[in-house]
Amino acid sequence: METVMKYFETIPSLHRSILLVGGLSLFWILEGSVPLIKFDYSKWKHALPNLFFTATTVIINFLLAFLLLTTSDWTTASGFGLLQWIPELPLWAEVIVGVMLLDLVGAYIAHWAEHKIKPFWMIHLVHHSDHKVDTTTANRHHPLESFIRFGFTLFGVFILGANMGIIMLYQSLSLVLTQFNHANIKLPKKLDMALSFIIVSPDMHKTHHHYRLPYTDANFGNIFSIWDHLFGTYLPFDREKIVYGVDVFFDEKENGKIKTLLKQPFQAYSKPTLAPETES
Image 1: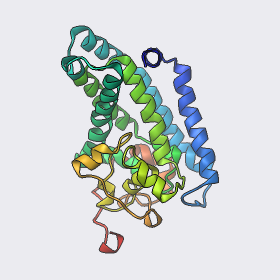
Image 2: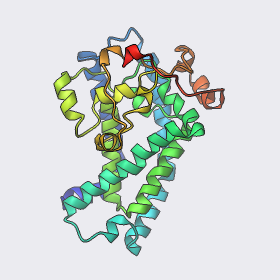
Image 3: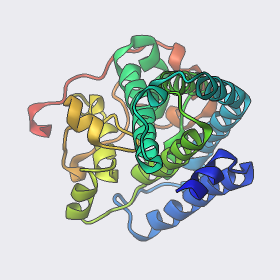
């Protein structure tokens, strides 16, 4: 475990790039072999705006990374933060607790807030307006959302007092898991259900991308599904009935244009309407 954590403390940028590109490539191939939905679309044309937003997300996180390093160094040096205050834990336990709590603050709570706070929801709409959800959708975030997500992660690092090894492990797992649970792949239903008790499975997250409430406001998790089960936001749905997109911006052609998506948060918006009873 010590060797693993030392690696993540100083993980080279090249290795993180390999995780990003390698994950996208792997799930891209699997989508062609075992698709959940056989989309009638140009996969590359659909991917272009999503890859553009992936690039903006990478750039913003790279430019702000020094804040994570500075905050982590200060908390560990000064003994500040939950992980510093609890009685000494074995390294493996500290890592598990640290990653889980970063997932809670940096992903689950951030995602929940983006659905409950109107200005945040307006920005988050760009992610939900994809009508062909696949692994490239994972990082389809408006640049403003990248700042929001980073802010929550930074706050999580501050209150937890997490070291850089835990932070980098969390971010690496987050990257791979979000590519996995957005991927247009069809797992056996029993396997997907079993996975959903521990991690956010593809079927579990696809429910979140259904275009109507209450499904849009459910299944907020990123890595671990425990937070949705614990806070009562878990909601199952028949994957055969899922319709992607969001009903307030349902023009699929416009939602595939980078220029439109960049302006989308500043247009008139509202929350999705309740789904009819026949969808429940």
